[in-house]
Image 1 (cartoon, rainbow, N blue to C red):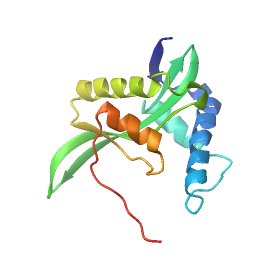
Image 2: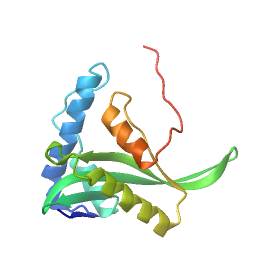
Image 3: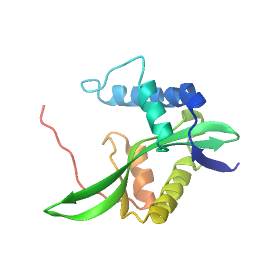
Image 4: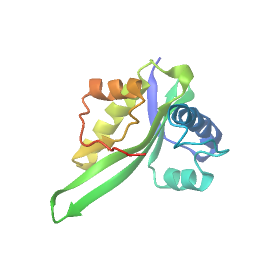
Length: 153
């Protein structure tokens, strides 16, 4: 099957929200002291804004939305760091029915092309330390550790 990455459309909100709920449930299972159930994971207004700004993408597999990608374009400029433009992956998820089919890899290929087209310096993301499968996918693709967030409870 061919994977097609494209801009998300407003009428796909329910499908996108269902995928976001799958990810939220994983986070709840891993860290119930941090994450909780909410009827809505991705507010409709935020989704509309991202669609209009063309920062929300979907992966189609067999003509069905199988994955979602929400990015933020960041310009980093301050006195103690090199000025950089990065694509930050705010959310990326693949519907559990379609995992293992190369959709995450297709998203990364898409982002590398987008980074090059825009002349950006890099792509960054954060991953939950409990999400070993995602960490492995990111590492295997070539992502490296930049920083580690720690907590004391």
